[in-house]
Amino acid sequence: MQEIKQGKSENAWLVWAPRRQRAGKRQRPDLLKELEALVKAAGGTILGSQTNMLKVEHPGTVIGKGVIELLKATVEENEIDVVVFQNLLRPKQQLNLEQELGVKVLDRREVILDIFAQRARTREGKLQVELAQLSFKSGRLVGTRKDLSRLGGGIGTRGPGEKKLEEDRRKIRTIMKQIEEELTVVRRTRTLHYERRKEVGYPVVAIVGYTNAGKSTLFNRMTGAEVFVADQLFATLDPTARKLRLPSGNEAILVDTVGFIHELPTELRQAFLATLEGIGEADLLLHVVDGSSDAAEANVQSVEMILNELAFTDKPSLLVLNKCDLGAVFPGNSDWADAYTVSARSGDGIDTLLEAIERELSAHHAERQI
Image (spheres, rainbow, N blue to C red):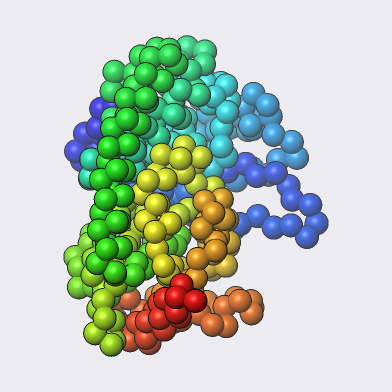
């Protein structure tokens, strides 16, 4: 995969074609806004967007012929480089849309993969990105296989997953097997690190939450670390661990993990499981929520759904509403009554949170002794 040229930004048009919901059901209103943030994080320039409600999804192109014709005119008039769908496109739908529109067409999964390709820094992270990209591409070897020959750079074409991609699944599987073997070595090293931590006796606290909830800012505030922080989705990917000093003077290990997102691509869940193993080793989870977001409750549900799929829901956890300095939004949900309100940026509420962490770890330790 060739990287986008420095200073070059692709003009992107966003499309969301949700099905009409039954009475009583609601679409998440923030999904198109989230897609916009993803494309910006990948380096694209948003020139516009459209939402087309569907009674039935067109099996070959998602949207109907009339909408495609209008979209094609928009693409030509605005010199659009890439059309990005919120919908998850099937391989044939993607190919048909590219042929109809005459430009590159992506869905949100490929944008997320592209961001991960840009942001991964450690050897493990890069291997996991490559594995995820190959897994995704192997299922999209259809038609002319145009998606494997995009060498012009830009969103969806970066990262090691596109280097020398052979034209058949058998060879791709061979590459994937080699990567998995390398990851096995990396995971073995990670396991040794966890075992050493257990020998020392430090409890482990893992920060989890929706992407851009302020997890890394909170991590830095609590540990004095200098993990990269930016107001964008997936600003940091590689897991980081630092010592955390508790109010009593005791210490724990605090682990910052990759942010979750609505409908996290299956390929990423599998490939990044090693990164998320830090959650499995944790004695306590801090579920950090952007308390100022209108989508706070929906984001909590998305994170809990992924934790449930990864079988991590049995761990004790504290709900932390971050960004209280921006004006927290409190849903009418009784489950939020015990949440801890903090501002990772200003430090408000951090002392109270640290005391709660120590109480939970002490209680957990006492239970294990019984």
